[in-house]
Amino acid sequence: MPDCDMREAHGLLDLYACIDDAQERFAGLLKSYLVDHPTTIDQYIRYLSFQYHLTKDVQRYFLAIAAHGDLSRRRRLREFLCSFANEEELHYLVAANDLARLGLRPLPMPFDVELWHHYFGKVVVDRPFVRLGAAAILENISDGPAKEWVKKALQGSFLTRDNTKFLVLHQHEVLPHGNQILNAIEEGDLEPHHFADLSEGARKGTVLYLRMAEWAIRPTTLASICDHGTISLDQQEEQRIANFSMTELGGTSGLQQATP
Amino acid sequence: MPLRDALVEHADRFPLVGVVRDYPVLRRIGEIRHRQYVERQGKAYGSMVLDRQCLIEPSDFTSVNIYARDARGITCAMRVGEVLGDRNPYSPLFEKAARRFGLSVETTLTCTRLVRAPRHSGRHAVHLIRFVRWQTVHAGWRYCIMQTAEKLVPFFRKFGFTETGIWADDPAAGRLQVLVLDTNMRPTQEESDA
View 1 (cartoon, rainbow over the protein chains, first blue to last red):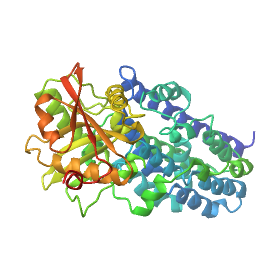
View 2: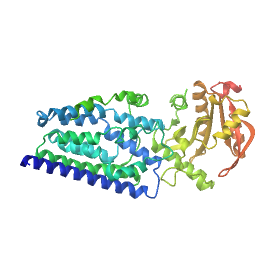
View 3: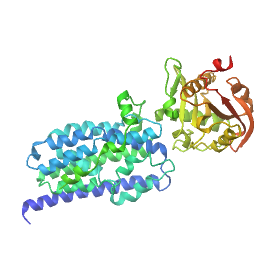
View 4: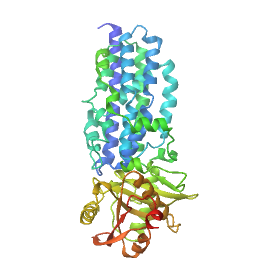
């Protein structure tokens, strides 16, 4: 195997190790609560709320990654990222509409989501693969050893077809974004410094995501001391949330075609 | 019109009345309920949230909670639901009362969990009842059913509620009487009773 292939294989293995570690830690976090209790509706409200803030304007990140010069000769990866941006762009409305079906608006943005946007919003411009590594975590963290605990977490008498659209959409079987992102990275002909950035982003993404998850599971965790007030939404956004229909998401054909 | 569309804030006519759209507000109401029902009255109502000092129930997410406020926060609150399709534990009793008195269940709403903050007299409950009547009658709802302890029956009679003679032995709350209000599609009591 040529040296460059070896380096690429090593970089990929490191990213996969980050994902395995994130899944183990996520499983441990869920287990620590779920082994003794069922999920409660306040935890679910917190989960949907942080997902709303985390996924709102997510297309900006993927389009920023696609816009970087390092992708000028990696056009399949660029094409994938553009399709991914289109597909993910409206998912925040799904989370908000699930909350609206419970008669509620999202909670204000948790501090750890603020940190996420401050950090990745800056780093994505010059080091886009850091953010892509975090995306690889977000899209895969619920799989592997975490899968059984995620399934257990999603059982509650308050869950109905109308208020679980975000969850259903993000089940691996429905939307295999985790595999798609890893396939796109594998086929991207990336260099060692790209893999180093992917792993760095994966680790930092794991830290922040697990803190968000803990904020949802344990409403009195440290980050909750920053919880304050209620969200302010303009009337147009309120209408967009209330009138949202899943048909607005369109099909996934564009992504499937672009996926290497 | 669904209750969530009917019960929207009306700042000009009911400046003190708010509609719950945010979980922190519902949680605050849940804390007032817990203090009133569980701590003070010893009722063994079960909550569905992690916080043990907060009474929140499944029907809070299928109904609409409203509240009155002053400069110091929430003064009193009430839950408004539909007889049909609500997850309120009293729904079967309310549906039975509606059918016995020939009320159209499609246009009958329920009022439950009326509470007041310990620091407040509860006089703002009047605003809540008038708000519900005004908003829902304009949206096509005609009847309202509620149940209450005997000592509060005279209070609700002032708003046009009538006694049905139907009683419930609530395992937590004790003996409660079901009351009915027929608005005759008039949005204010003054107009209907004058």
